[in-house]
Length: 481
Image (cartoon, rainbow, N blue to C red):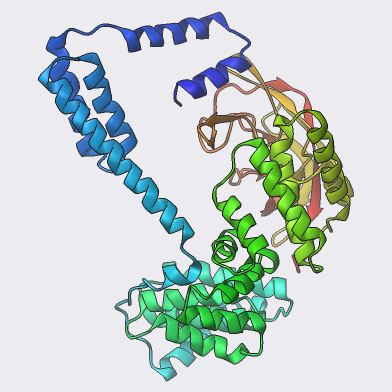
C-alpha cells in the first residue's frame, strides 16, 4: 500500500483519530530534516535497492530522488539526481517498449518463436502415445459436444508442461489438442498449440505447421485470412476479418483488438485503438461505449450481442462518474442492452441484477457474521455447482474494528489507473469465498468435490465479523457447459 491507498482506506474509517494521527506521523517522518552527514547512508541504501531490484526503475528513481532532495548541495545529491533521471529514462523506454508490444498482433509475435530441443517422435511411437492419451481420458473422448471437447482440450493442455520429461507423450498431447481444436473450429488454440510444438521440439517450423493444419479448413473465410496473415501480418483486410472472429466469436478480445487496430475497417479500427488506450476517464469510456453500441446495433446476430455486451461494460464503468442528462442517457442504454443480451456466455463476475434474477437455482443467504455459512447443499464426486452471488447485495465486514461495506468482490483500493486488492492473503477484504467441507478456499465460481458447500466472507485471520447478508444462487452445472 502507498499513501494514496492509506488515504482511501482512511476515508472508510470516517476520520478515525488513531489513524489520522498515524498518518500525520508518517508525513512528519517524510518531511523531517536529516543531517547531511547521513547522506552516505541514504545513498548506500538507494544503491543497494538498485542492485537488488535492477528492473524496478520507478522505485530506483524514487530512492535516488529522496537522496537528491534531502541532501541538496552535496556531491551525493548531484550524483543521486543523475541516477534518478537515468532510472526515469529507462522506465520511459520500458513503458514505450511495453506499449509497442501491446500493439503487436498474434501473428507478429509468433514470428519470434524459437525452436525447442526435443526430438519429434517417430510415427509408431506417436501412435502408441496417442492411444495411451485417449485411454487415459476415455470418458472425455466419449463426449461429442463442442463445450465438452473444449474441456478436454483444456485438460490436455494442462498436462503439457507437466509432461516435459516424456517428450513422446508431450508431443501426443499437443497433436491431440490440434486435432480436437480443428474439429470444433477453435482457430486460436490451434495457433498456440503449434507454437508450443515449435518451442518444445526441434525441426518444427511454427508457421509451416500452422499452414499444414489450417489448410485442411481452407474453405473457411476466417482460415483464409489467417493463412494470409501467417505470410503478411500487416494485411489490413485479413486483420479485420480475423480480429472480428477473435473478438465477436471467440470472445478473446485481448487477441482480437490488436488485429482490429491493424485492420482496414475504419469504424472497428477506431474502437480498437480507443480500447488499447485503456480509457480511465468517464467521458472517454462513454465515447467508447457509444462506438460499440452503434456498431452493435447494425451488426449481424452473434457479433451484435458481443459488441452490445462490450458497450454495456464500458457504460457501467463510466456510470458512477457521470452526471446530468448524459447519466440519464447511459441509464437508458444500460436498461436497453440488459434486455437484449441473451443468457449465454455470461460474465458471471459482472452480472446485471436482471441477469441474476433470470438464473435458475437454489437461493441461500450468506451472513457476514459467520466465516463459514453451511448452505445445506451437498454435492457428490464428479458433480459441479456454480456459486453466483447477487451483484448488488452488500454486507459490512469488520477489520481492525473498521466497518467496510462491500459487495461479494470485497474492497478494492485504487492506485493510479489500475485497481489493487486491499487484502491480507489471497482475497480482498470482505470478499466472499467458497469451499466444499474443509477443501480449498476459492472465489465464487464453479465448485466440485464431495460434501456440503460452505460460503462466507474472507477473514484472513483478522477477526472477521460483520452484519448483512448476500444472496447466492447455487446452480447445477450441466455436462455441456
